[in-house]
Structures are given as structure tokens and as C-alpha cells.
Length: 481
Image 1 (cartoon, one colour):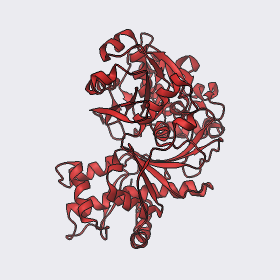
Image 2 (cartoon, helix red, strand yellow):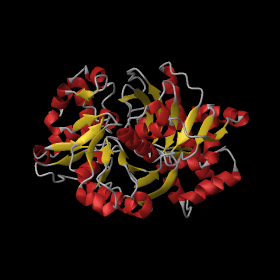
Image 3 (cartoon, one colour):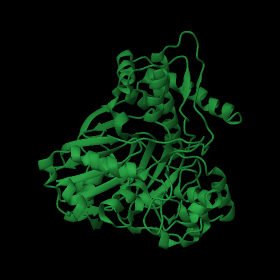
Image 4 (spheres, helix red, strand yellow):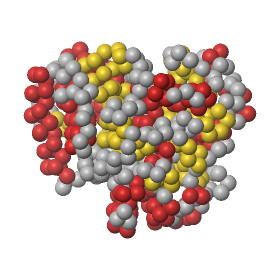
């Protein structure tokens, strides 16, 4: 049995996977997010630890006793700062925080080679600009920094006492030489830090430490190894079997991602594409990222008066009616790909008396689909040949949303068993690899296909026009924002 933990933004998910790669049990525990100022997004790291224990305790007690290893996945980019007594200095600054845009510009100006070293543009979501912001705006807090950890790696520290991270998650800090898979002293110096402030780096399938006796006793497991794991998207790729060049998926969680695996380092910063290490040795990946996907749909569910998010998905699926009126921009947290604009905002455009909560809900599904389609187009512009994509994450439960996305992108979408489990399943696979030493290409095979959603020709024609309006709306409102 292998335990996979995903430290997400809206909650922590725990799964138990047996030797036949069947999900035996799963559980989750919710997390709050704080937005104390415009563009700010923070969490208390202690909430991650609490929610992790809660989720694990909900799992079957007998199955837990058979756990042989633990794997970690988590939201990327979050800055968790500890002092020399390993105490939390301030709330963690999250991936969808936009306060450090000016610091990104400073870093790019001071180091023209930044993109060559890191393979990425400096963006407010990344960890390094957040620390540069702290250095300028919270100097007393900055002076106390002894270690900076990513969210899942703070949880690792609390579970094992070790300071460790994996290549895929650490590549999203903007402190790594992504091609060499090592920390860059040169880029760290831009933020006033050194490698002494960083955790030790491991490949995602390598063991980092063992559970502490206290944690093992509390969970009812042995002191088993904890694999390095991966950032949520790389771990999701491991779970979906996206480990060969050219394979890809769409992740529908709080954010939305289009992910392509590669066996070479091929950076391309045009269009705000990310290039990171994969969670497995010798692999890299490219990503286009939108900052609000399922979270944007959930937001519309609340403001449109649906009792639950599930009700929105159910009603739009029952209606199966493509939008004809209002168009929704889902930029509630700013945007990354392709705009790299932390000041972008969401909007409904074209509302009339004929619009209803249901038509607004449909516009929300389409707005996210159009934003993801923009990302697909940017990846194609790099030369990537995308013929099909798998779908993972909580949003994969809505088949109607899948039909909307397939038609917006004009691509078939493949849904696989356990697709909603996503990164936690990948973390469990990495846990297995860290103790069994198997060939990852055999362990990380794609799960069995559940169904495939093909584009609808009539919807493709309709969405071609609506996407054009969607694109014009961003550029028309950019100056206003």
C-alpha cells in the first residue's frame, strides 16, 4: 500500500493505492485562503499540517497499516519562510498572489540572462519575486529568513524533520538552473539568498527521509520512507501516465494547466510558457497556466445563486446549451499564459434581460475553456503537435464541461480511471518507485480509458466566433485594469 498526499490550495487530499494501482480509499480536508489586500493571496502553513493529519485520519485504519511509503504533491510556488528556530515568519505567499509584479520587472532588468538560466519569465506567482518583495517591503521579516520551503516541503519537514524538495516543484521557484537541475547561486543572489537557505534537491522518485516516530505512531503506520514527490502538475502527469515526449493533459483544479512532457530541455518564454523539470529523472515539461479554472466556475456559482458548485455543473449538463449571449473573462486572480498580467480582472460582457443564472454558468464554463484554448495555441506555436489531451483534476467530473472544452480547442479529450484523484495518485506512484526501484515507464502507464469526448462540429463553429470576442475583450479592458 502507498500513501499519496496532495497539499492543494482549497484542500489536502490523501489516497491509498495498492500494488495493483487500485485506489483503495481517499479522503480530503478543506483549507482556507486569506486575501488581506488586493492582489494578495496567503495561507497559514499550520493549516496544511492540520489538514494533512485530518485527511490521513479519515482513511481506512487497516489499510493504513500496510503503507510502505509516502509520496507528496502540492501547490507550487508558495513562499514559506522559516527563521533559525524553524518557526514560521509570516503567512505563506501563494502561487496566485500578484503583489510582486514590480519586483519581476526589476529582476528581468538586472539579469538579462535570467530566462536563459531558469527557462522562464519572472512572474509574480513564482517564489523568488515574493522574497524580493519581502526584502523591500518587510525587511525585518526578510532578515529572519533561514529557510524558504514550498508548501508540500513544509509539510514534509513537519512529518520527517528533513529539509528537502524535488526538481519539478523547485523549478517553479525561479531559483533553479532548470537544464542542470540545480540551484542557481546567481539567481538566488538577486533575492539576497544563497543555497544555504534552500532545501536539498532530489528527483521525485527518490526517498528523502522517513516519517518521524511521532507521525508514524499518530497515523498508525511504520516509519516508512517519504519520496521527494512533485509539484501538483508534474505529480498529476505521473498519475496520468504523461511521461513520454509529446504526451499531455489538462488539469482542472483551482487553476487550469495544459501540460506537455519532454525528454529535452526546450525553454520558450514567448507567450508566457513555463519550462520546468518533470518529477522523474531525465524529463522536463512545458506548461501553459491560467490562474482560475474550477475556482472561477465556483465563483460564478456563488454570485449567480446556485446552492452548491455541484448544482451548477448538474444544471448546465442537463441543459446542454452552448452560450449565445454573455461572455465571461475568468481572470479573477490576474493571468499567466498567454498574457502574464497580474492586473487582469474577470468580467461578464454582453449581459441582457434574457440572461439567467444558467446562462451565466454556461458562460463561466466557456470562459475557462477559451482561456485554456489560448494556452493550447501558444504551445502549438512552439512547434508542439497536440493531437489529444487527457483530463485530470476535480473539474474532470463534468462531462458537459469536457464537451465545451473539446469544441473550444477542437481536440479530443481522454478521460481515464481515477482522473479526479490527480496529483495524489501520482504522489502514490512516486512513493512506490522510491521503495521498489522499478522502471517508471512500466509503473507510470496511463490508467485505463473511461471515455473520450470528441469535438462537436457545430459547437466548434459557434465557439470560433465567441473565442474571437473573448480575446478582443481582454485587450479592450487591459488599459482599464
